[in-house]
Amino acid sequence: MDIDSLVQRNKDELALLEQLLEYRFTDLRLLQKALIHSSFAFEQAQIDKNNEILEFLGDAVLDLVIGHILCSRFPQMQEGELTRLRSSLVNETHLALMAKELHLGDYLCLGKGEDASNGRKKSSILSCAYEAVIGAIFEDSDYVTVEAIISRFFIPTMDSKKEELLIADAKSRLQEALQEKFNEAPSYRLDKEEGPSHQKVFTVSVVFREQSLGSGTAGSKKEAEQRAAAATLVDLDDAIAHFSD
Image (cartoon, rainbow, N blue to C red; front, side, top):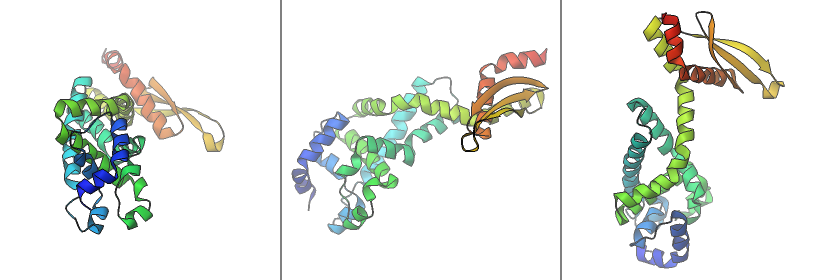
């Protein structure tokens, strides 16, 4: 079955997906091709007629556009932090979640075996299909159009992803800052442990030179330490000034 036949057969479903994307394709064959998994193409004896090239293009477009958005949105962040934040937005897990929001699995053309093995819910397949759809939009339009679409989907999650990243990196950043200034590392003190064994809540403080600099509370000691470090980093300049006097 060639691409034109598929478009004709699936035109109603493709129209529904266009509504979800809020984008109308000039060449609907591009959208259809973005939804063709290699297993389907192989069964149709059209091995090269799958979404892999569009996936490659979409991956590059996402990296560029999201990198551009992050630089504009968070100009104070360092290059390494921007790289990690972008990675958290374009990794397989997050792209699969974005694909599920579009119900993208319902529109995929899969081989019989892949379909029978729950391929429509596999993160690897969904994330690649999402990249392919972005690649198809770029091929069908231009940078400005695809940037607007990517912004609509990704900006709502950027702040929460940034907070997750900063908390996850807080201990290492705090240690680097204190060692650079004083050649000493902070320690962490467990202040409180509450709740039943299956639902513990821990409160931890950052201690430096016998003084508490900040505290954090979470469901694990490790996360409580990260949150305590993140709280300390907020007022780190004042703390450093105090110990430098």
